[in-house]
Image 1 (tube, one colour):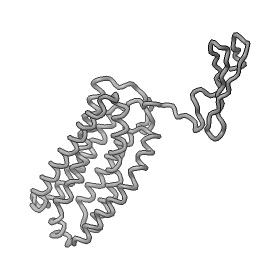
Image 2 (cartoon, helix red, strand yellow):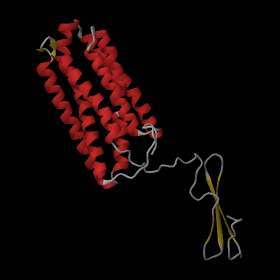
Image 3 (cartoon, one colour):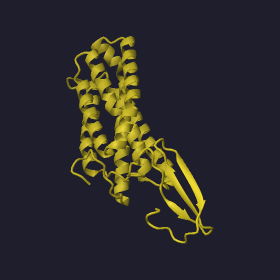
Image 4 (cartoon, rainbow, N blue to C red):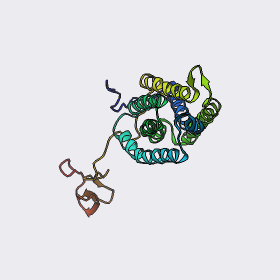
Length: 258
């Protein structure tokens, strides 16, 4: 375990820590889904406040889809190299800040910029959550955990869409309801960034050692069976293994032969 949350931890996860980690993941997935689901319910408010047209809204969704699709493999690659706990905390922090900035936007163009940037970091959840669950639970329970997380995500989206539709065009004091919705979900995201950093446990990976490209588990090993046959497997630079078998009258295999 290191002092930097961006480096991998390999500590075993106890029962309580496992349940807590799954609970935190469910909460973050629900917040992420609520954030996504709120915006469609705010379209009429954007038309009233910013004079946004349907074509402007279409451009926003096109940009969100594009940057989300491009960001997913990048986050997946980083998740294989660095601590997933650290990346999740970082992603929640930046996405929460960008969401609150979007709530303060003075024009629809500014809102599109902040929203598109936020989607880059919101995309971090999908690949990292799948990776964490795969290492956190045995194979016979992974489907159940994915179902629980998916249910939390769907519930968050349902709640977010309902609240946004109900209050987006209203005024809470002197503040428009859609701005309040985004401030709340952005603040929750920032708060959970610190909660994840403190309470989440990074599970050990299924295989912590990164093997070289031409690794072969039986490379350069000599094995003798009862028929005095010696088998040696060698690996060429291109990664292909070649096995050679020959008879020998030697009864013992010396360390030099190995």
